[in-house]
Length: 401
Image (tube, rainbow, N blue to C red):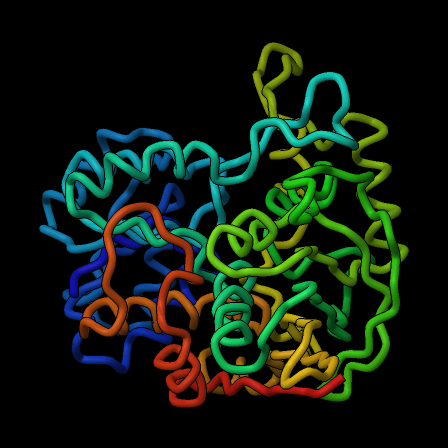
C-alpha cells in the first residue's frame, strides 16, 4: 500500500510511526504545509525513500491530486483539521483512489434555532456524494480515528455480539492527563477542539432524529477505568452521533467529553470575545482568522509528550437487553502517556487516535474490510479490528456496568 498522508502534525507523525514496522506499507508520503515539520518527522523515521517529504497546501485540490499521481498512491489519508476535508475528499474521487479521514466535513448551525434544530450536519457533504463514490467503485472510509472510529467499531460489536436490543449508545471520553509547565495546553488540535466544543452538540433519538442542545449541557459523572476514576462529562458535538444511527439499531446516541471547569471557562471566554471565529478579519492590513491566532499562541500538541503525565480513556457505553435482562457495558481503550512515549515517541492522545487508521489500512489492504461508497466504521465486521488492537499495542477492555 502507498499512502499520501496529508498533515504531519501529532496524529500524522503517530500514524507514520505506528505503520513503520509493517512491510506491507510500501510508502507513506509525508505532505504538509510546514515543510520543516515534515522533515523533522522524516528524520525520526530514518528512511527518506520510504517516507518522502512534500510541500502541500491542503486547501488546494489540484496540488493534492498532483501529489497522488506523482507517487501513484492507493489512498489519501487525511490527518488535517476537518476544515480541509472537502479538497482532499474531492481530490481522491477525481484521481480515482480510496480516501480515509478521522473527522467528518464540518457542520453549520441552524440560523434561527441553533440549540434545538440540526441544520448542515457533520458529514452531510460527504454522504450526499456517496452514490458517486459507489458508481466509481471507490471507498471513502470516514471517521476512522479513535472517536469517531474505534468507538463506532465498539458500537457495531455491541449490536452483533453483546445485546439483543440496544436502548442507548453513549460515547464517553475522559482522562487524568496533566501537562506540566503550562497553565493551559490542550493535548489535541485547539482548532478542532474549539469547533466541536462550541458548536451545538447533536443528539439522535429514534423518534426525533437528529437535534441539538446547548454546548456543555447535561453534565454527568462517569467513572472511567484504568485508574482514571470519576470525571464530569458534558455534551459535545461529535461524529459518532451522526454515524452510528445509520448502521446500528438503537433508540438514542450521545457523545460526552470530560473537559473540566478550567477548559470550559477558557472556551467560553474565547467565544465571548470572538477569538473562536474561523473567518479571517482585517488586523492592520493583514487578513487573519482569530482561531488561527489562538492556535499559534498555544504550544503544539505534537511536542507536549514529555510534559504530559497520566492516561486517557475512550469508549462506548451501551445500554439494552440481553436474554431478557437489562445490561450495561462499557467497551473502552486506555492509553498511558508514558507507555506511548516509550514505544512510539508520540503522546497518548495522538497515538490513541492514530493506531485506528493504521488498523483500517491493514484490514482494507488485506481484504478483511471491503466496500465502496462513503462508509463509516460501523459498516464493517468489528471482530478483525478488535483482534488487531492488542497486536498494535492498544488492547481494548469490556466493563460490565
